[in-house]
Length: 315
Image 1 (tube, rainbow, N blue to C red):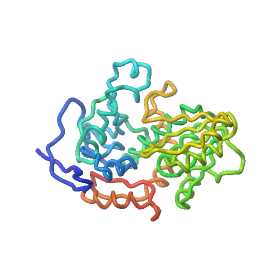
Image 2 (image 1 turned 135 degrees about the vertical axis):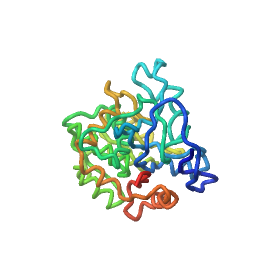
Image 3 (image 1 turned 90 degrees about the vertical axis):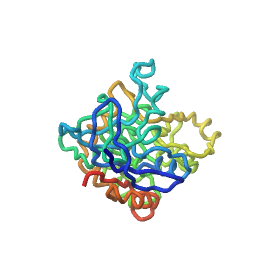
């Protein structure tokens, strides 16, 4: 038996017939997959050696629609037992679409504990957004965002907009800074307002650049916190004097776990269920599986109003 799946060779994306997935777990017919910025980086740098796709949603053989937590932590080490799954040594090498074949395929086999049944009102074609929302949940949890806080988000790609949605769900007021008007418009639909001149106690740097980090430190008030859910693929410059004089704390985060005691994916699912506008605001482009190469080309071009590109595996 074979199935269609995205393959990457020397940075070239194709769709090929491959063997059906094997292993212990539940077979999921993949419905939709999001293209993440890390997918683009890994492909363009020649580092992608597996089927891409870690933002995944689908339907099990018994008809249950699910989102998939792609980071397969062991569940047994001290880190996992303490709810800090990102520190598990097995987690990253066993992450769908990063270390093992991912969701840009017709089917995938997933250990049952990494399947998250969808809440009512969550559409399976939008449920892959639970993964980037979980990234935002961890970042905001690590900096302690709570009801009544004022949060400034720098950068309005997928992660930045997910941070807006999570912060609003938690009861915060959110200001958003972005260079792109279509991203600001999407943020406005999610309840964000434009940034003011006042410093903020909590700033989220969601763009992943040296200039954005400098901007976040400049925006942050004395004694404040800069949360960093971004991935820095290249060295960054830090305005260390300003950071030190203002005693600003930098708090990076990676992936998800049980950051505040609750499973980050569960809280992310609640955010998506409570935010019907989220999918419409973020998902700007959709392609069939056979159009995967065109989908990746579209995701690279942010100037044409693109935010999140989805691949619809099951049409």
